[in-house]
Length: 190
Image (cartoon, rainbow, N blue to C red):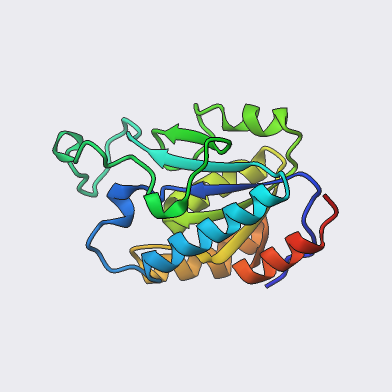
């Protein structure tokens, strides 16, 4: 864990904690209920400091061919893309709907963050090796300081989760626990 500081204008960006994903009956590296609870805790603390909270959901996919089987979008429940109610999303929070793994491409997220002079993002969500990692790579390429709440994310594949946290994230950002991020947030000048 190596978070050195939080910038005065940091934003929380939470990836894909929507009903259709958090409700999937599949095993994950860490319990989804814990991930949702930590994201809600982070969001509350960011709001208290007047910092942006961004909730990202997915309702489509890139058009390219892939080998892995994908669910038929027509067979998904109507509320599949709605954010999980346990998150406590507020009207002041920003929402981004994406059609790719990463949250930046074609979503207006970069413009929203730059309009608020954000220089650093704290990431949490599902899935570590796809949605979170793809968003982080773009954020890093765009010049943001990236922080990963490592206990605030999970993946269906434990090895992929571990690889992202141990091998990839330290090369494009800083990692720490939700509690340590919250403690640093409390010590940061508003």
